[in-house]
Length: 248
Ligand code: PXP
Image 1: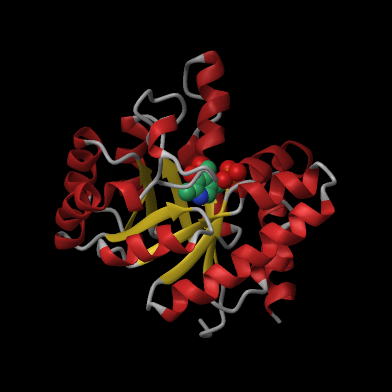
Image 2 (image 1 turned 90 degrees about the vertical axis):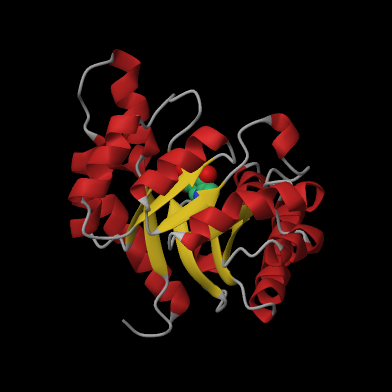
């Protein structure tokens, strides 16, 4: 893979959302994950929430068993989730906020205020070989704190940019995009690997994919929604194509 390759992590949470709407086994998130691999996903992302509203513990067991590409395990910074991650040792662990008080105003994890706690929380995960990523707003203070606690990766929250775009607030979208651009450069200058995600669609992915410092995008909801119309394989391949065009 070339150095310029932008990885695509496909988030399969919302296959589980649909399954759980009825209970039972269909649609199967593991089948979606294998299909995503075949369609060119470089990784699979799944968020085991404290309330288990979509992905289940059994889904994580299954993903660890069947995947040929790396699993990016998203979780809140809780003791329960830490135990699960230490048991599975996924390739990557992305720490995300689940409760209001864990969030910054922009919606990423509040790292600056919780620096000591988070530094202690991620140390054992790094010790067992997980790449620890912090889901964070495009905010210099939070990025500096993520660097200080020993994270190797930050994932920039693209939700505010995508919301502004989809609501037709062009100036806000341009402003959010510029903040993401500047902060991806800043994080890279600290030696952090930069990922991005949340709310990305065919209409919003290209400007982010064009940032040279961004190494990975994690995309779920739009792709699972689009697969209703196109099928999962073509939906993912189209996202991959747009990312490649933007990158070139
Ligand atoms: N990255 C992170 C850290 C997330 O929490 C999510 C949503 O679970 C995503 C990316 C994917 O966002 P979306 O489903 O809106 O594409």
